[in-house]
Length: 115
Length: 108
Image (cartoon, rainbow over all chains, first blue to last red; front, side):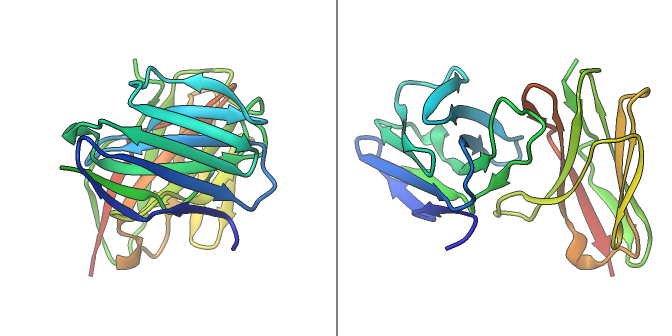
């Protein structure tokens, strides 16, 4: 595997379900990001991790819970979601978040549908 | 004022023409500038980055940066229908900020 991978690629869940999204980067980067992209809306930054430490939480509801066990893996745990949470969830990585000029590389995304 | 502004489009150009995509930014301390292409339902992919004033060319793509005017553009020469996508401008300073994107349609 190369680059940034995400699983699952598609997820349908009910509002009472609990599920997790997984992201893995094979680029040797130290920073990882979660973005949300709703239909016809710009990218919304959700969380940022640098060297496994959370450095940014962009006022995300607590029903989204991130986890970063190491610099290569990032999870987004989902519970009691709402239909408006349906979106494309993108993971990205970069060398180091303190270097804001670093290029971010995106995974293929998880298309989430909440019924 | 939005930090990174792009015309949402759609910008329609005929096949073979030059497509010009523009982006303005508010932070004068910005150091790095990126263009991403995003096909419908797919993730953004990096096309080019530019750090210095002037032009940077890569194949059919040219990025232009004018820091004094806080303006960055992307020119696509010999546009092809496969170039039809949303183009995202991203500006980096102490963090990377994305614009909302411009939809480009290349008509054959």
